[in-house]
Image (cartoon, rainbow, N blue to C red; front, top):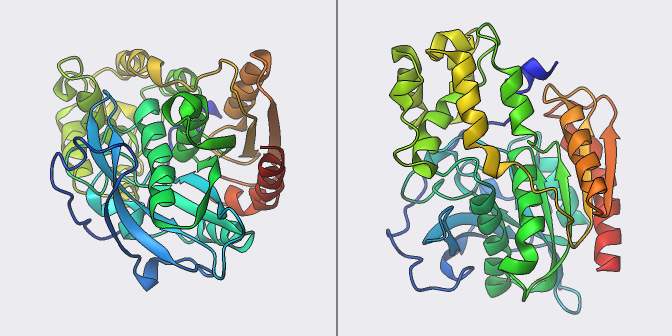
Length: 369
């Protein structure tokens, strides 16, 4: 079952080209500074949304440099409560690295809309990040825990500059966004001490990269649609160390090039029926290399200062056992951890199935925070 992990590990959202922020626009500005804010188009708003904005905001890259990231901020309708709306910083699932794939441009995919609408109906404002390099100039850093966390936390900071939201916030994420939320929970106290982080909720998070890559060593294993994007993002975060032409076949390099123009839904169609042997010169050696390159991006398992809550569908092709292992590691470190399986849910239905549990968790986290 682990062999299927990389097949549906991350999710797709098609969309339109994002407007660009000027290169270097984040330089000299505190993280979370709003560079651009505009009304979110009606077609992209969730049902039950009050005010909503598409934003670009200052943040920090994977290597600690200033950058600009895009995203959205949505608040419930009506008057905010005293102290402002309770705030969720949300990490969406991966949709591809081209600007066209940014959540702030493509919108929320249909299977995820009920989850976002449930948060708004429960009285939460939601700040969503597009992640570094997706929706703004430059190549995306892809799977980089620190960059993901910075983008998520700074979306929360940006929300506080334009909307009546509270200082208290929770990190929530789905799929790759679950990876981002966990990293944000680990770094929140040091990166943004002025905020009041109450805890982390990750739904079907992508964790245990070493196990995932080990399962993909088989040359005949189905090719993950995420793989072509690695050929674009790993050279960004490992300059001079990772060269795609050393690992990919000529056909694989064509897919890497296509991933620079297409969202993951299109790439998923292009790789359907392909195996690792079709795109890698030596699949086993490539997975060994990926394991080493991703070692620094494994979810931190040292004790988290605030509670962590995890949910995963029992029918997910990204095996729930990966999240169960992460939960056990966090428990061993002394983290306040709770894991809840979502019976019968797969990677696409888990948000709807887990939504009631997530809302219960958030109510407790904000109550205790």
